[in-house]
Amino acid sequence: MDKDEEKQKQELCEAVAEGMYAVDNTAQKMGITIEEVRPGFARGTMTVRDDMLNSHGTCHGGMMFTFADTVFAYACNSENKGTVALSCTIDYAKPAKAGDNLIAIGQRNIRNFKTGVYDITVTNQEGETVCLFRGGSYQTKMESVPGLNERFGIPPD
Image 1 (cartoon, one colour):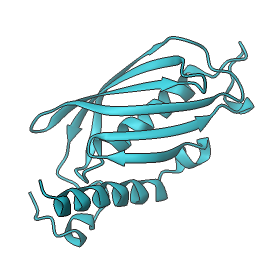
Image 2: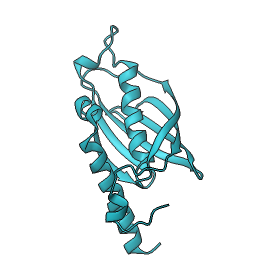
Image 3: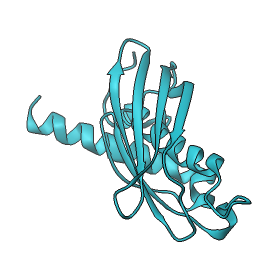
């Protein structure tokens, strides 16, 4: 792949993330930001707020799942191939507390014709692993952000 193709792929990834985020009410309301995207990769952040705590005073597991799942979505949709979750699992390693700044890094491990497997590692501001998430994906016939492929000169499948 030459530099121009590489640049266009990166620009597409960024346009996809921008287009998805514009209508991603959950990410916006939870304060999730997507800081970096590349083909098959996304990095996001979220600060744990008081309204995200459970009765133990730690971040509710569902909130951490949603955070990891959001980064998973941006990683597997990064190339504007409409992709949805087939299955997801999460293992919690360490509690997160109010004020913790969480970082999620999602990476594609496998992408076949229509399916893929992505791993998302969530750490806190100290670099300690908070949870590990694995998502299985399924590619649909849709674009992640309708109209982007045409704008980027990508032929229909």
